[in-house]
Length: 382
Image 1 (tube, helix red, strand yellow):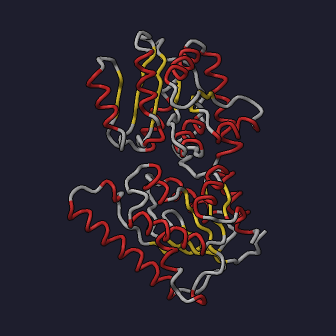
Image 2 (cartoon, rainbow, N blue to C red; image 1 turned 60 degrees about the horizontal axis):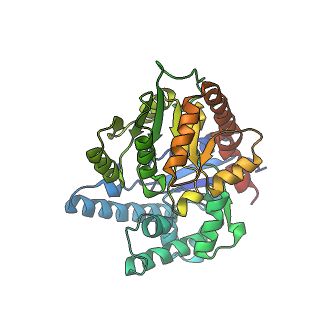
Image 3 (cartoon, helix red, strand yellow; image 1 turned 90 degrees about the vertical axis):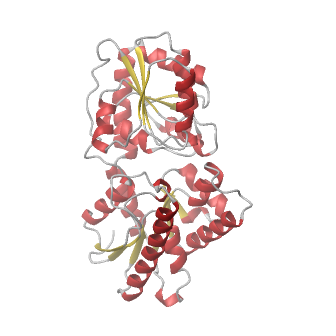
């Protein structure tokens, strides 16, 4: 346990908004833990994602603000008192990269880095926004590797992601630790599941439509189940693979509800509350095998039946679970997904059992309380 009065500096260019719940609620819990004298140096890059900017001038302005934000943060850090510990929220890479060029006496002694997800891995391997052999990709890799080399501990969300980060950047396994994400427990609160509404079974998917979600598998399952008028598919979200839904809707004259506009956490929580089955991720890529996405936290926090792809992460946690907290099917297998949806749609008792199991799983494995205990223990151990 830490002695009272140990100083913790939160240092970064992070956004304290509901679009970044892990940052917002992790920092909130750190400040309220009472274990540290907490100060914060932060200069957010923008009120929106750079990727959401439209037009050349807006992108240039966003990049310019990003550069300014990092320079301001480094300058403020250099002029501040040296803390016992530094915690750098996501996105941490560029802050740490700049700090790595400071003289050794100015660098923090103990740095805890919230990697969340690797920027290089996301941009190059997952979303193919940069070619791996391109100069930009190689520079990004070197910057991220240098940033992690400066860190005392690097925090990711699952053991599978920890092992992947170690392999990708040649890090010692003791340097990376897995701690669950923090999420919005103000809106995603437990609510008893009472069964289907008006004889219908509403199947919900919430997400940003990135490749690992495997939205095409969900769409194919909807086609297979087109004769089941009691099963209603509802998709909430927009993103990279939205074009797949657009193309699907142009080819099929089937009822599929799609809410494409941005939804607040309160609105997403209401969608989950009114659902009977919640869908996780079904992509065939490597990243799918390692992650527990935010949607899973939200579904389980409220307590709703979940079907998701069978992955390295799900196999790991199910092997340790005392009860069945959720259902799994092979990834990229629309037939298996359709069969499992039918099974749950026809068995309200099973849905109620799974809803209780998912909430218990959240409390014991994913809650903010669990995450904060692991984080403060990680810091105090050093």
